[in-house]
Length: 163
Length: 422
Image (cartoon, rainbow over all chains, first blue to last red; front, side, top):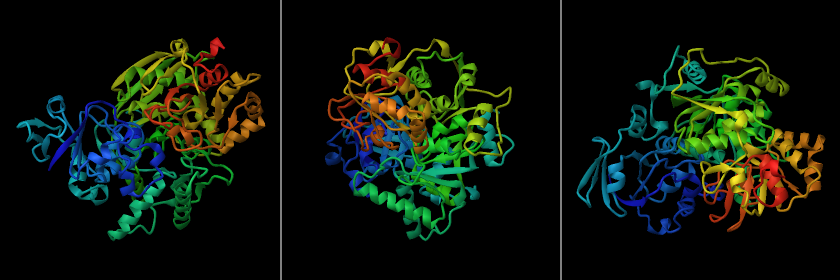
């Protein structure tokens, strides 16, 4: 999976800035996407392209359980968020709803990857390649259950009884 | 095993579980509201199109529904969401639907305890992050997104990674001018907004024994702000009495073993706590109230699942009795049952005499939805739980999180005020 990076070099990007509370009444996902990241980056909607990745620091997606957060990003075209760590409900929503891949990275990837860099993520090798800078980094492997739910295409397609 | 491990082992049908085990656990109660509910309905519509049957819920008697975030409806999208919820509960025979304008209703987490919807030992999931609140009753209470809630509605179970547990031992009784809110702000400030990430935060010790059930609810409520999977207190006679008064019977009190293991133990001297605020723009950005006492305010907001339970309103009334507010002040009891007690016991008269506007139960401005949201540059002291940029309105508004005592004292002076300095 290849994409270009939109980098927010900070920790604790919360769901209130990913999709502000006033929009939680909206369940039209195309409309929701027009407000993605509005609380932090009003230009996000105009600059994001289909297939882009977000790169950020620790505790990405902290705050509310609103599934609107991964939905707004996913319907904006974001295919993966690379972060040093994730808040639990955002992570779980992203995986169970099959909206985007939450990729846990190490400090070298966080420091090495810049805005607009072209990145390739290879989940089978737990490897991230920075095509622009010709560097590679390790991603933290998914836990067993997360890997299986992602492979199935979301929680509803995952069959626990077949394990 | 500790209490959480025991509850999850029971739900998973196993004799024991340990941290990091992944289990599919049977759920005892599930909640959705007017934000997560329409999301669930959308998931159901999608499943139907994929040929997956959504004709029947696993057990509609275990489901309950709240209307709280966008009620009373300020515009037509919210009104339509409420209509959708009503159609859904009628179609699936969900009887426990607390509708605004029809007797008891309120913020979902408040209804969970006011109506004894959740019992000690339950595995309870809700489509809202502050579902953690209800762990104060001795339940495993955990927030989920709406895809997971839809899954539970159809399957009656969901996966959990068994969390590690951080044990917070609280020693001694809180001083009169300090509330559980001050204590949990202090803890979130100390460990940070990811300091409890993926963990259980369990509270115990003489400080918790001394506390009312409502104070314990405040502690567990804001474990969410430390990133915790759940907050929990082992149930005692106070919990039994509290729930019995609200019609509950048949208790199954699960407690941890004497030799239960905890990943970390933190100790706090409750008796030495000070009134505390969290400054903009994070719940971890805390200081004692007296260090922020020069901050001029535009508004005081006493509302939400965190800060508008009956004891919160009582605390505010102690300060506001015989005084006048100097800034706009809103008090929104978190459920109709609380509103009614506030009326019967004279609290509403105290508030109105002080110049406060008393509003209906709603999440309202706490999440920037409606009913008192903040303008650019407005500064608010609030008994709510989050103060991220834009949380209560304009992205350049500012919210200070505080206890109801501090919010009321600050309403009287127009500046952030320690109740002892009034």
